[in-house]
Amino acid sequence: MISRRKLLQIAMASPLASGGALAHALPRSFSLAFCGDIMMGSTFPGEALPEHDGQKLFVDAAPVLRAADLAFGNLEGTLLEGGETQKVPSPTTYAFRTPVRYARYLKEAGFDFLSLANNHAGDFGEEGMNSTQRCLREQGIAFAGIRGRCEYALIERGGVRFGVAAFGHNSYTLRHGDEAEVRRILAALRRRSDLIVVSFHGGAEGRNRARLPYGEEIFLNEKRGSLRHFAHLCVDLGADAVFGHGPHVPRAVEVYKDRFIAYSLGNFCTPYMVSLKGISGLAPVIEIQMSSSGRFLSGQIYSFRQIRGTGPRLDPGREAAKLIKTLSEEDISPRFFTIDESGRILPAVAAASAPAQTSAAEPSGGPSGQGAESEDPRIGEDILIEEPAPEAAP
Ligand SMILES: [Zn+2]
Image (cartoon, rainbow, N blue to C red; front, side, top):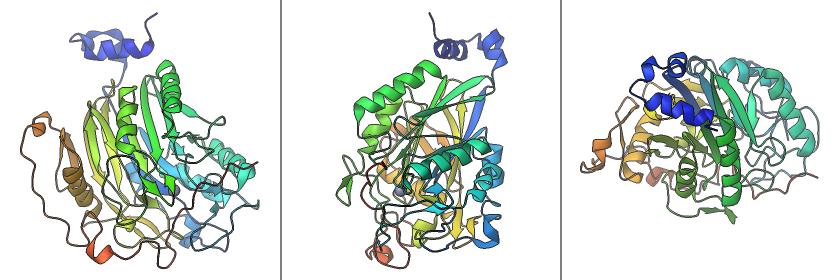
């Protein structure tokens, strides 16, 4: 039997598509918005909550997130009252517990999907996971990323079924380092959905980790992923967009086989307990237009900058867009896309044969975070260093 997914592809590829009943009934494209880490504030170990009790966290970003057909992010930590953590707070160990009343801010901001495949979803064990998932369910926000619990989500938009999976590097998450697991999940999504989006939490952390390396990244003695390989594998297995987070700084974007990949969106809404210094404070949202067959059509990087205790605020200097442009030009070759100063991303097959553009590094620290940012990223006030994987809660 021909799959619905295949039918869609045929319908969209056909020169007669505009006259075909199936194609006619479907939107020509979708807009998808991606951002990075969200930890709206914590009541553990002490109280570190944003101003106005969080009600203004997303005022600047909500118009962008809500305008998209689907908005995606990474929820670091738990939505929970009470509970217990196995973690012992220290300068390098954090456990995040956000009040459950903050869940509605995520909905109001426009999020449709949040990844739980990260190193803080298990901060308060089973109880924390149950509470977080209950809160998201109440808000109608899809989530995924925990093995055996919530491995992927299916979201319907305009008659098209999106399958969304999230991978991390902790024992309780689906792991991007486990190729058999990646193949298993992507096969399930191919069977059950028309278009596939994959989230991953991976890569070394810190302001000197914005460059995208080749091969496995090791951080705090943990394998944090071979992320170019993983992202390409996902596309090879049917993913139509892949977005990453985890390094706490933005990284390059890529168009591979006409599919969009963002290697790290950095921090997005982390008003406390996460460093916002320098490029750690950049909070991009990348919105892409995707065809009904999953092809990347265009993108726009919206530049926000986090203000401590306040939330992401529109950055007229467009630093996030400039940084992602520079990083992408340096780290991705060949490039099947171009990014301009305003953050507009366009496919450009011709760019593959064009000579590499030379681009001046950004003056403030540069994309590799050297110079002014050369201090140990682990030292300083409330720098977040996420500790090695805690074992899954009992
Ligand atoms: Zn993390």
